[in-house]
Image (cartoon, rainbow, N blue to C red; front, top):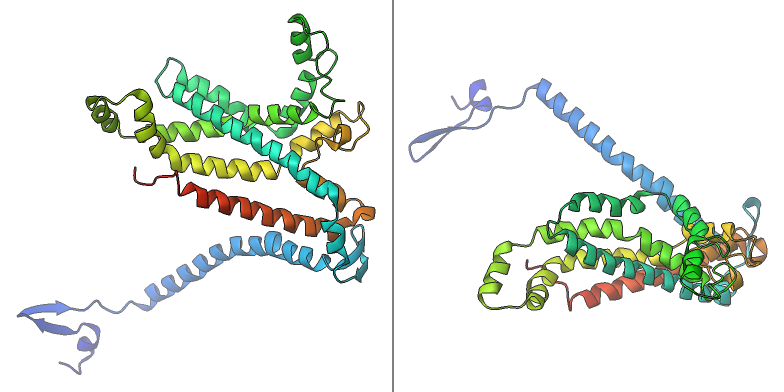
Length: 335
Protein backbone atom coordinates (compact mmCIF):
# COMPACT_ATOMS: atom_id res chain seq x y z
CA UNK A 1 0.00 0.00 0.00
CA UNK A 2 2.91 2.35 0.72
CA UNK A 3 3.99 2.26 -2.92
CA UNK A 4 0.51 2.47 -4.41
CA UNK A 5 -0.76 5.65 -6.12
CA UNK A 6 -3.47 5.92 -3.48
CA UNK A 7 -0.88 6.13 -0.72
CA UNK A 8 0.85 9.02 -2.44
CA UNK A 9 -2.40 10.97 -2.55
CA UNK A 10 -3.85 9.95 0.83
CA UNK A 11 -1.19 8.92 3.33
CA UNK A 12 -2.58 7.03 6.30
CA UNK A 13 -0.84 7.57 9.63
CA UNK A 14 -1.58 5.80 12.86
CA UNK A 15 -1.51 7.92 16.04
CA UNK A 16 -3.00 6.47 19.22
CA UNK A 17 -4.97 3.95 17.21
CA UNK A 18 -6.67 6.61 15.07
CA UNK A 19 -6.41 7.02 11.35
CA UNK A 20 -5.51 10.48 10.08
CA UNK A 21 -5.65 11.25 6.41
CA UNK A 22 -3.54 14.01 4.97
CA UNK A 23 -5.23 16.52 2.68
CA UNK A 24 -5.35 15.45 -0.93
CA UNK A 25 -3.14 17.27 -3.38
CA UNK A 26 -4.81 20.22 -5.13
CA UNK A 27 -5.88 19.49 -8.65
CA UNK A 28 -4.36 21.26 -11.62
CA UNK A 29 -7.49 23.39 -11.88
CA UNK A 30 -7.14 24.58 -8.28
CA UNK A 31 -3.42 25.22 -8.71
CA UNK A 32 -4.17 27.36 -11.75
CA UNK A 33 -6.81 29.31 -9.83
CA UNK A 34 -4.40 30.00 -6.95
CA UNK A 35 -1.74 31.17 -9.41
CA UNK A 36 -4.21 33.63 -10.93
CA UNK A 37 -5.14 34.86 -7.45
CA UNK A 38 -1.49 35.55 -6.65
CA UNK A 39 -0.96 37.38 -9.93
CA UNK A 40 -4.10 39.52 -9.44
CA UNK A 41 -3.15 40.29 -5.83
CA UNK A 42 0.35 41.35 -6.87
CA UNK A 43 -1.05 43.52 -9.67
CA UNK A 44 -3.47 45.30 -7.32
CA UNK A 45 -0.66 45.87 -4.82
CA UNK A 46 1.57 47.24 -7.58
CA UNK A 47 -0.92 49.97 -8.53
CA UNK A 48 -0.47 52.10 -5.37
CA UNK A 49 3.26 51.35 -5.42
CA UNK A 50 3.46 52.63 -8.99
CA UNK A 51 1.48 55.72 -7.97
CA UNK A 52 3.90 56.34 -5.11
CA UNK A 53 6.89 56.05 -7.43
CA UNK A 54 5.42 58.36 -10.08
CA UNK A 55 3.93 61.04 -7.85
CA UNK A 56 6.19 60.94 -4.77
CA UNK A 57 9.52 59.20 -5.20
CA UNK A 58 10.34 60.50 -8.70
CA UNK A 59 9.49 64.18 -7.93
CA UNK A 60 11.55 63.99 -4.74
CA UNK A 61 14.54 62.61 -6.65
CA UNK A 62 14.19 65.37 -9.27
CA UNK A 63 14.00 68.01 -6.52
CA UNK A 64 17.17 66.64 -4.87
CA UNK A 65 19.06 66.80 -8.18
CA UNK A 66 17.91 70.36 -8.93
CA UNK A 67 19.28 71.55 -5.57
CA UNK A 68 22.76 71.41 -7.10
CA UNK A 69 21.82 72.97 -10.45
CA UNK A 70 21.10 76.30 -12.09
CA UNK A 71 17.76 76.58 -13.87
CA UNK A 72 16.10 79.41 -15.74
CA UNK A 73 12.52 78.88 -14.67
CA UNK A 74 11.33 75.39 -15.60
CA UNK A 75 13.39 75.20 -18.80
CA UNK A 76 15.33 71.91 -18.65
CA UNK A 77 17.65 73.06 -21.45
CA UNK A 78 19.15 75.72 -19.20
CA UNK A 79 20.23 73.32 -16.43
CA UNK A 80 23.81 73.76 -15.28
CA UNK A 81 25.81 72.40 -12.35
CA UNK A 82 26.64 74.93 -9.62
CA UNK A 83 27.55 72.69 -6.67
CA UNK A 84 26.43 74.14 -3.29
CA UNK A 85 25.81 77.77 -4.32
CA UNK A 86 22.03 77.37 -4.02
CA UNK A 87 22.36 76.33 -0.38
CA UNK A 88 24.00 79.68 0.39
CA UNK A 89 21.06 81.52 -1.18
CA UNK A 90 18.56 79.43 0.76
CA UNK A 91 20.13 79.82 4.20
CA UNK A 92 20.61 83.59 3.74
CA UNK A 93 16.99 84.13 2.65
CA UNK A 94 15.73 86.30 5.51
CA UNK A 95 12.16 86.35 4.14
CA UNK A 96 12.04 82.57 4.44
CA UNK A 97 12.95 82.58 8.13
CA UNK A 98 10.53 85.45 8.74
CA UNK A 99 7.76 83.43 7.08
CA UNK A 100 8.09 80.81 9.83
CA UNK A 101 6.71 83.35 12.30
CA UNK A 102 3.61 83.79 10.14
CA UNK A 103 3.24 80.00 9.85
CA UNK A 104 3.46 79.74 13.64
CA UNK A 105 0.53 82.15 13.86
CA UNK A 106 -1.40 79.89 11.50
CA UNK A 107 -0.50 76.95 13.75
CA UNK A 108 -1.92 78.92 16.67
CA UNK A 109 -5.22 79.20 14.80
CA UNK A 110 -5.41 75.39 14.50
CA UNK A 111 -4.72 75.03 18.24
CA UNK A 112 -7.51 77.54 18.94
CA UNK A 113 -9.74 75.48 16.64
CA UNK A 114 -8.87 72.37 18.66
CA UNK A 115 -9.90 74.06 21.91
CA UNK A 116 -13.16 75.15 20.30
CA UNK A 117 -13.70 71.57 19.10
CA UNK A 118 -13.31 70.18 22.62
CA UNK A 119 -15.75 72.68 24.13
CA UNK A 120 -18.43 72.23 21.44
CA UNK A 121 -18.06 68.43 21.42
CA UNK A 122 -18.44 68.33 25.21
CA UNK A 123 -21.66 70.37 24.98
CA UNK A 124 -23.10 68.33 22.12
CA UNK A 125 -22.28 65.08 23.91
CA UNK A 126 -24.81 65.96 26.62
CA UNK A 127 -27.58 64.72 24.29
CA UNK A 128 -29.12 68.15 23.86
CA UNK A 129 -32.08 68.58 21.55
CA UNK A 130 -30.96 69.00 17.95
CA UNK A 131 -27.39 67.99 18.78
CA UNK A 132 -26.88 66.04 15.55
CA UNK A 133 -28.15 68.98 13.50
CA UNK A 134 -25.70 71.31 15.22
CA UNK A 135 -22.89 68.84 14.51
CA UNK A 136 -23.72 68.99 10.80
CA UNK A 137 -23.74 72.79 10.87
CA UNK A 138 -20.31 72.90 12.49
CA UNK A 139 -18.94 70.35 10.00
CA UNK A 140 -20.08 72.26 6.88
CA UNK A 141 -17.21 74.84 6.96
CA UNK A 142 -14.67 72.01 7.13
CA UNK A 143 -15.88 70.39 3.90
CA UNK A 144 -16.22 73.69 2.03
CA UNK A 145 -13.35 74.67 -0.25
CA UNK A 146 -10.73 77.03 1.11
CA UNK A 147 -11.23 79.29 -1.92
CA UNK A 148 -14.94 79.81 -1.21
CA UNK A 149 -14.36 80.39 2.50
CA UNK A 150 -11.50 82.83 1.86
CA UNK A 151 -13.57 84.88 -0.59
CA UNK A 152 -16.44 84.98 1.90
CA UNK A 153 -14.22 86.20 4.74
CA UNK A 154 -12.53 88.80 2.50
CA UNK A 155 -15.98 90.35 2.01
CA UNK A 156 -16.66 90.17 5.76
CA UNK A 157 -13.35 91.91 6.57
CA UNK A 158 -13.67 94.68 3.97
CA UNK A 159 -12.64 98.00 5.56
CA UNK A 160 -15.64 99.77 4.00
CA UNK A 161 -18.98 98.01 3.98
CA UNK A 162 -17.65 94.82 5.53
CA UNK A 163 -19.77 93.08 8.17
CA UNK A 164 -17.21 93.22 10.99
CA UNK A 165 -16.36 96.92 10.64
CA UNK A 166 -20.03 97.78 10.19
CA UNK A 167 -20.85 96.05 13.49
CA UNK A 168 -17.90 97.74 15.20
CA UNK A 169 -19.15 101.13 13.96
CA UNK A 170 -22.61 100.42 15.33
CA UNK A 171 -21.01 99.57 18.67
CA UNK A 172 -19.36 103.00 18.75
CA UNK A 173 -15.83 102.14 17.61
CA UNK A 174 -14.62 105.34 15.96
CA UNK A 175 -11.74 103.84 13.96
CA UNK A 176 -12.33 100.17 13.10
CA UNK A 177 -9.23 98.21 12.05
CA UNK A 178 -8.06 98.52 8.46
CA UNK A 179 -7.72 94.77 8.00
CA UNK A 180 -6.30 94.96 4.47
CA UNK A 181 -3.68 97.69 4.93
CA UNK A 182 -2.51 97.20 8.51
CA UNK A 183 0.28 94.61 8.83
CA UNK A 184 -0.72 94.00 12.46
CA UNK A 185 -4.30 93.03 11.65
CA UNK A 186 -3.74 91.25 8.33
CA UNK A 187 -2.45 87.94 9.83
CA UNK A 188 -5.37 87.91 12.24
CA UNK A 189 -7.74 87.68 9.28
CA UNK A 190 -6.06 84.41 8.35
CA UNK A 191 -6.09 83.18 11.96
CA UNK A 192 -9.82 83.89 12.36
CA UNK A 193 -10.65 82.29 9.02
CA UNK A 194 -8.71 79.09 9.79
CA UNK A 195 -10.05 78.92 13.36
CA UNK A 196 -13.60 79.17 11.94
CA UNK A 197 -13.02 76.44 9.33
CA UNK A 198 -10.95 73.96 11.37
CA UNK A 199 -13.18 72.83 14.32
CA UNK A 200 -15.68 70.74 12.32
CA UNK A 201 -13.42 67.70 11.95
CA UNK A 202 -12.21 67.94 15.54
CA UNK A 203 -15.78 68.05 16.86
CA UNK A 204 -16.61 64.73 15.19
CA UNK A 205 -13.40 63.10 16.43
CA UNK A 206 -13.81 64.28 20.02
CA UNK A 207 -17.49 63.30 20.05
CA UNK A 208 -16.55 59.79 18.94
CA UNK A 209 -13.86 59.60 21.65
CA UNK A 210 -16.30 60.78 24.34
CA UNK A 211 -18.88 58.22 23.23
CA UNK A 212 -16.36 55.43 23.82
CA UNK A 213 -15.75 56.34 27.47
CA UNK A 214 -17.21 53.69 29.77
CA UNK A 215 -20.15 55.25 31.74
CA UNK A 216 -19.44 52.87 34.63
CA UNK A 217 -16.25 54.83 35.37
CA UNK A 218 -18.29 57.98 36.01
CA UNK A 219 -20.74 56.07 38.23
CA UNK A 220 -17.87 54.71 40.32
CA UNK A 221 -16.31 58.18 40.56
CA UNK A 222 -19.62 59.67 41.77
CA UNK A 223 -19.87 57.02 44.47
CA UNK A 224 -16.39 58.00 45.62
CA UNK A 225 -17.47 61.65 45.81
CA UNK A 226 -15.36 62.89 42.89
CA UNK A 227 -16.26 66.35 41.58
CA UNK A 228 -16.97 67.04 37.89
CA UNK A 229 -13.52 68.55 37.48
CA UNK A 230 -11.93 65.52 39.08
CA UNK A 231 -13.94 63.21 36.82
CA UNK A 232 -12.77 65.15 33.77
CA UNK A 233 -9.09 65.09 34.79
CA UNK A 234 -9.08 61.45 35.92
CA UNK A 235 -11.45 59.84 33.41
CA UNK A 236 -12.45 62.01 30.46
CA UNK A 237 -9.13 63.63 29.60
CA UNK A 238 -7.04 60.44 29.78
CA UNK A 239 -9.67 58.56 27.73
CA UNK A 240 -9.72 61.11 24.90
CA UNK A 241 -6.01 62.03 25.10
CA UNK A 242 -4.99 59.81 22.11
CA UNK A 243 -7.57 61.61 19.96
CA UNK A 244 -6.39 65.00 21.19
CA UNK A 245 -2.80 64.03 20.42
CA UNK A 246 -3.77 63.09 16.85
CA UNK A 247 -5.70 66.35 16.35
CA UNK A 248 -2.83 68.38 17.82
CA UNK A 249 -0.33 66.70 15.48
CA UNK A 250 -2.56 67.37 12.48
CA UNK A 251 -3.00 70.99 13.59
CA UNK A 252 0.76 71.52 13.81
CA UNK A 253 1.24 69.89 10.42
CA UNK A 254 -1.52 71.87 8.70
CA UNK A 255 -0.48 75.14 10.34
CA UNK A 256 3.11 74.92 9.13
CA UNK A 257 1.86 74.04 5.63
CA UNK A 258 -0.72 76.83 5.29
CA UNK A 259 -0.81 78.09 1.73
CA UNK A 260 -4.15 78.25 -0.07
CA UNK A 261 -5.97 80.61 2.30
CA UNK A 262 -2.93 82.92 2.57
CA UNK A 263 -2.55 83.08 -1.21
CA UNK A 264 -6.23 83.80 -1.85
CA UNK A 265 -6.30 86.56 0.78
CA UNK A 266 -3.20 88.08 -0.83
CA UNK A 267 -4.81 88.00 -4.28
CA UNK A 268 -8.15 89.42 -3.15
CA UNK A 269 -6.53 92.29 -1.22
CA UNK A 270 -3.87 93.10 -3.82
CA UNK A 271 -5.77 96.24 -4.85
CA UNK A 272 -5.38 97.68 -1.36
CA UNK A 273 -1.68 96.97 -0.68
CA UNK A 274 1.59 96.76 -2.60
CA UNK A 275 3.03 93.67 -0.87
CA UNK A 276 2.92 90.28 -2.59
CA UNK A 277 1.32 88.73 0.53
CA UNK A 278 -0.44 91.56 2.27
CA UNK A 279 1.02 94.75 3.77
CA UNK A 280 4.72 94.21 4.44
CA UNK A 281 4.21 90.55 3.42
CA UNK A 282 2.37 90.04 6.71
CA UNK A 283 0.53 87.03 5.25
CA UNK A 284 3.60 85.36 3.75
CA UNK A 285 3.55 81.82 5.13
CA UNK A 286 6.48 79.44 4.59
CA UNK A 287 4.85 77.43 1.80
CA UNK A 288 3.64 80.66 0.16
CA UNK A 289 7.22 81.95 0.16
CA UNK A 290 8.50 78.68 -1.35
CA UNK A 291 5.86 79.01 -4.08
CA UNK A 292 6.95 82.58 -4.86
CA UNK A 293 10.61 81.55 -4.90
CA UNK A 294 9.95 78.72 -7.35
CA UNK A 295 8.30 81.15 -9.79
CA UNK A 296 11.01 83.80 -9.44
CA UNK A 297 14.31 82.91 -11.17
CA UNK A 298 15.91 85.97 -9.61
CA UNK A 299 15.33 84.51 -6.15
CA UNK A 300 16.81 81.16 -7.11
CA UNK A 301 13.87 79.52 -8.84
CA UNK A 302 13.17 75.83 -8.45
CA UNK A 303 16.63 74.82 -7.06
CA UNK A 304 16.39 77.18 -4.07
CA UNK A 305 12.70 76.36 -3.62
CA UNK A 306 13.64 72.67 -3.39
CA UNK A 307 16.17 73.42 -0.65
CA UNK A 308 13.63 75.53 1.25
CA UNK A 309 11.15 72.65 0.97
CA UNK A 310 13.75 70.31 2.45
CA UNK A 311 14.31 72.70 5.36
CA UNK A 312 10.56 72.91 5.95
CA UNK A 313 10.32 69.11 5.89
CA UNK A 314 13.08 68.85 8.52
CA UNK A 315 11.42 71.49 10.71
CA UNK A 316 8.03 69.73 10.52
CA UNK A 317 9.68 66.39 11.32
CA UNK A 318 11.42 67.95 14.33
CA UNK A 319 8.20 69.55 15.60
CA UNK A 320 6.23 66.31 15.26
CA UNK A 321 9.04 64.33 16.93
CA UNK A 322 9.07 66.75 19.88
CA UNK A 323 5.29 66.59 20.07
CA UNK A 324 5.42 62.79 20.18
CA UNK A 325 8.06 62.85 22.91
CA UNK A 326 6.09 65.34 25.00
CA UNK A 327 2.89 63.33 24.46
CA UNK A 328 4.33 60.55 26.65
CA UNK A 329 3.75 62.88 29.60
CA UNK A 330 0.00 63.30 29.05
CA UNK A 331 -1.34 60.75 26.55
CA UNK A 332 -2.80 57.56 28.03
CA UNK A 333 -3.63 54.41 26.06
CA UNK A 334 -5.03 52.45 29.02
CA UNK A 335 -8.70 53.37 28.50
